[in-house]
Length: 264
Length: 279
Image (cartoon, each protein chain N blue to C red):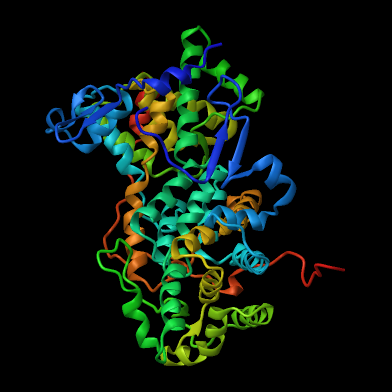
């Protein structure tokens, strides 16, 4: 067995990019400083992730995905981490990195969105194979499988959902196959399980319509909530040191052992 | 590869033809299997890793006790809280510890503060003149720094005028443990300097003194501080993940939005959704 690392150790071919200092810098297959002069950073980032360019409307929609989840509430965990680090007077970047790292959580950002995208591809493929949506979902529920993107109690609306629907409608972009499928799934789950969609279903439905791979989706959403961190961090600097949601000893309910001896 | 990575720390040797598979590994010349595993303890190894030299017996005891002091800063520490915020959402351990390091790195209660305290503490213990509080700020001030402005005197608690019993007891413990120059100086002078500032001494001041007495430089001390915060960060994160996010305080009653901007309700989209279902 030949170890492929050997040849890579000798020669490392790359098409990701290349910098010839004092000359030029290539971003994938394009000259960074020339080809992207009229592009936004967001477009550049998407080109880096997918190697594709998107239409103006598609970019507006993908941008709105980022915009509509950029919550700046300090209570939200990634923002809270950035703010806590700020309260101890860490640098902006170190604070943001701490907040971003938490976005690897099972409960928000990358994992649920990627899982939801995977779910849409799975369900779409089964429908294309001739199965009915009802049968597909019945099987999933019978096997206790999670239908990612759906889990909101029926009495609670994810406020991002109506805004996102409205946005897509305004831009005449609410006719994607997976986008429409998202509501059909919700209708069945409302009836069977009293649950409705959260925004992950719609974000991933739209990204499925745009043919994102799972890894591309992961990369695309990795910075999804970063914009909300800056205001939280900056406000931490305006408050006293350690002044972000400060805790006294009385805010802690200790439930462990007391006065144990190391040597009995 | 025309240039090689240079190191005096770690040597790998391969006896086979596979240049990716080491058959032996050493740290600063000590073979891990033949010398370190049978003979070294973790404190020896930690000191060796940071400094490149083996600790003497006194340094072993000091690092051991300093490590115990560093490990758990309490659940309210910003690094521990950062870890919990990552852990409660079931972020993987690597992500949790990145968040913990972020929250543990700052100039108030964090690793950066230890570095700044060491700077003035070394000046204090080598000064021929009486060292006062007003000597500190110009020693720790940095030009062109990416760090936020200092708003307190490193090593002293900004909002408390007295030193906690915990800090005093820790200081006494180390005073009695051995004759440490920087710890002794701190013990003999903290009340005088504290009353000039009307602030109490913080635990980071003791940690910085111990790092000085261990012979660490500022950079080594910061690395040690951050490394040893990680076990407690892991423990707190795991605990909150197990308890579940529903038990994790959201501060719903505490946070109050102060802007006067009027908010609109989300748009009504029921008819649109009906349309999507009936297409």
